Image 1: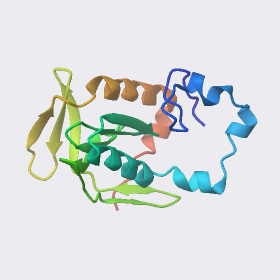
Image 2: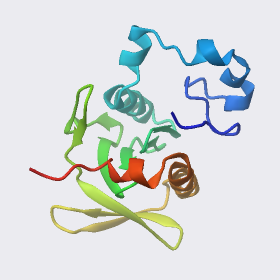
Image 3: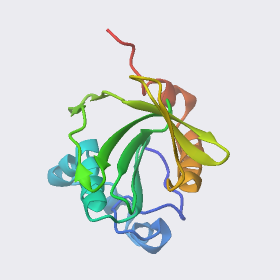
Image 4: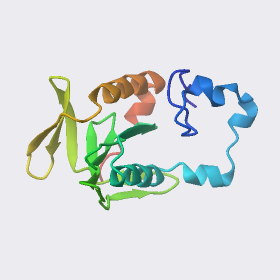
Amino acid sequence: MAKIGRNEKCPCRSGKKYKHCCANVDQGAKNQLSPEQKIEVTLMNSVREIQKQAVQRRETNSELGVFFLYSTGEGDAWVLEMTGCDCIQVARNGEALEPSIYENTETIEVNWSHMFDFRNKQLEFTAYLDKSVQLLPDAPSHEISAAMRRIRKKFSKEQLSKVHLPSP
């Protein structure tokens, strides 16, 4: 299990820093999740939560493993996969979109629609379908860059290499 940094957001989703939240909880009790809690920590549940924030036009972001999710005040929301720079839009103009995400206890399969990169410290998306490029000046570029660095520190190269499975 990867170590959580003291200044990272707490994985319990309280919105507090880890050092001000669950870091004070007994280590043994903290690592034992109930079956209900294990079911709740899924990508789709995180997607539904970020979509809800986008519909309410709230700017927020969160991390789940190698995924970074964010919503904007304009009502857009995106899921970014930090190791392969793939992403998919899950809300547009305050309307939730139905993402092509399939998950089970073994794997998560996502039909990524875009890839992302940084251009002049701003997030840039390129669509896989038509190669159109859009610059997102309101994206939390600084937070995304920091998340990428944290993920590369948190997971070993071997773990990161197993994120993407070969296509059948």
